[in-house]
Picture 1: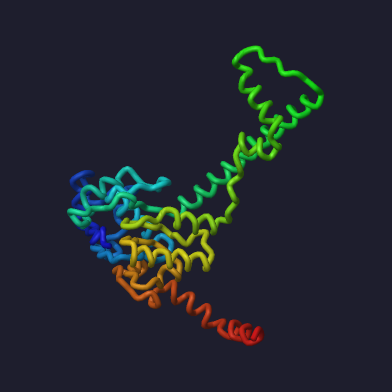
Picture 2 (picture 1 turned 45 degrees about the horizontal axis):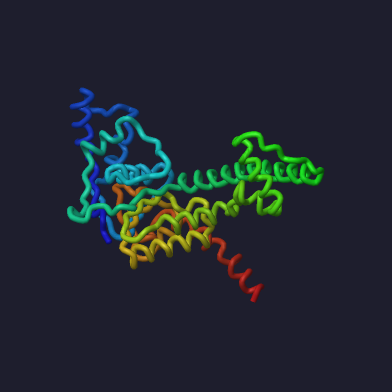
Length: 302
């Protein structure tokens, strides 16, 4: 399913004309991000397929481009991104995008970034710390009440304020410590590794018939998990009516079947086959130069 057909960025002349009207001179303010990035890359109009990938080195503009698209389409996001006071002005006056008039962007569409995964993992750890504290308090109360019972201490009911204490004492009488602590403090969340959490994050957040923007989804993922997420993306694009726009360095996402790749390292920016990309050529040279090590190791095992 194609929700986003194209996205058009301003030319250098359009940026300068806008600066002349709003700042009184032809040069945008030095801190007016994202002015002055894409015109010098020769990037004007982007066409999209079911899976479109932006690739390039650090600082090539991949994340900026995703953020422009996401803000243009008002896609929800989990964590904020670095921007400037001119960012939305840039979108409003100079960017254009083409989406189907009747269908529009489906509810449930979103942008997900590596920060979302990272902060989600941190939140889970914080929740576990808080749960541990509650469980320790509940266990201490249980032991204290058990000791009082063994000593034959009577419970004095003076007012309704003591009702909760009475209920808890009755629970202590009839429950094991583990059941009491779980009932009052909950259980700890199973501690996932970063990679396991990231993999489950995408499994839980992908929905049918939606547009998803993914900023470097490979972060925290092992090669095995990168392959699994890449396969998941291919399945949702092919069978479940989804469209994906992705920024990545990962060879597993760059080599997805049918993906349309924009090389932001080239000037002007061009679409390329995945094996032509500089990043992929770097991987190729690494394995080519060490081919004997891989082959000799395989022969020894056999």
